[in-house]
Image (tube, rainbow, N blue to C red; front, side, top):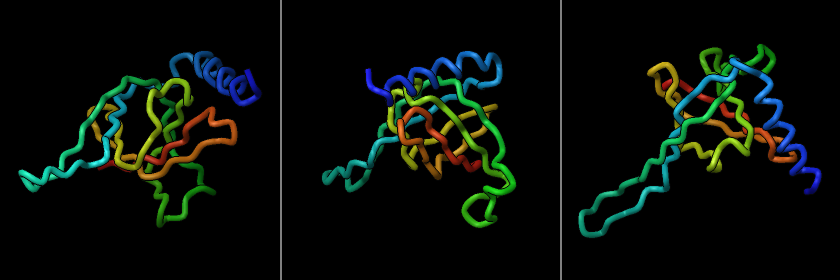
Length: 120
């Protein structure tokens, strides 16, 4: 296992040590739309995953009141805990509310996804 793999495993283990801080959310991966020439419509497939995610507000120094607003949430999830690569087509459901993925960041080891979430 290389260094990136070791960091990914350590991140996953650290998440387990957080106890009840991560919240269970439904992560919905939405595929690229596929055009049907016969019907003239486009459809996307949705696959739902249950994943534990740390949800928090953005720090004051991260807010720019344009792209990142005080009402946005930051979602942190180890890459090994999410079976898909996040996309801005995706969304999560938490406390019966839908939050759209509008920004995606990771670290150099691809160990942790940092998602910017906006309430829909």
